[in-house]
Length: 396
Image (cartoon, rainbow, N blue to C red):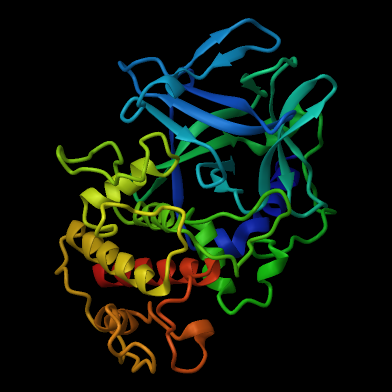
């Protein structure tokens, strides 16, 4: 039996080996009564997953009533929950972990309706793998419903090198989870796993390896509705701030609740906006500066030049936090771009090209940087990975 279980675990765990082995995430326990998984209604009869954590001693973030299902009143929607509640609304904020291994690349968390209730399931990217039932609402009503975890599952928090990250795990033990679901352990007849993140639309992308690493460390996620990454999609300014802060959190502890008094905010970023806390933190710590008129323009596409400006500030901040000299040492010969002369970001683009090649020609071809072009998801992910790797290398 022990040999069979060992083979089973090996077969399951090898699914994500190419993307996750290089990132040593750990986890820490959370007081289970302080966390709740919620089926959140949207767009008529659809539901998505919301995870809330109550910070002890603070104003209540939610209340519960009834049974089968337990209904949730999301109280945090009625006040500024900064420093009171922690919230995760997509795969950047939660994933599956089994037997101490991350399965965020291999399973997509979804809410589906079956037999008069909602199920929280882990849907495998490889159809040959078993579906995992994580929780159920045990009934059906209109509104926010509590998802009760199935036996073998619990909440935990992601950590990296001893630092807590803003990412929740639905964590369990493979043997217990499959036994509770009435499934036999995976055995040696299981088909060989596929490798990589499983997004078909990055298979030929020049940034494929860096995209997969960015996904593995939680910088960015794919689109669960069709299992794509959409590498050519432009990145908005708020999306990139969110991405870089997630990345910075793998190097040093980032506490979004620690905002210096009087640091101010942008007049076009409402406090209730999903990205507001990250944008405010980035402004307070010199990562972003905004526009001359006091706006941030969160939904505007970020240009490749603006990308470099933020990455330079992020790298400087991280080096300072690691007690390194803040200057960005040139690790390679800077690129003489053909189209940056006279541009406001010319010097910093050149500097970032010498800093582990963070700035590179458009699509890694020719000599043009195209500074005013919207940054695409593939290059944004790659540039963040290069920046983080360069800072970490300098630390050693």
